[in-house]
Length: 97
Image 1 (cartoon, rainbow, N blue to C red):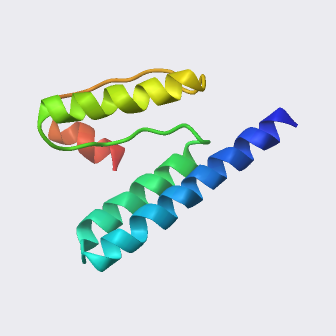
Image 2: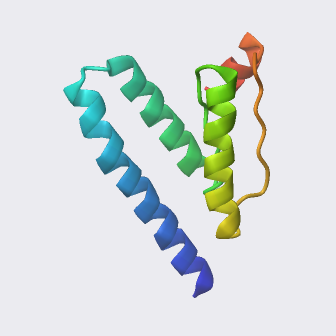
């Protein structure tokens, strides 16, 4: 029963993220970002609910965003690990996509 509740919660979160992010990306005509977002979302579903997030920007901003997100995930017992890679190799990015 607990597993079903976690799966339901995960699906709800994904749907919420889709409903929040996709219309904004479509309105702004950010097609490339939309494709990347949908690819990452499908990868998250494909790896059994485990997920990772790719952020781009200045290292300090990315670190701040990771800290915020990690704090929220930790409070709920959902964080396993966090890593910020300032300049990932091209091969790493290609292997994730």
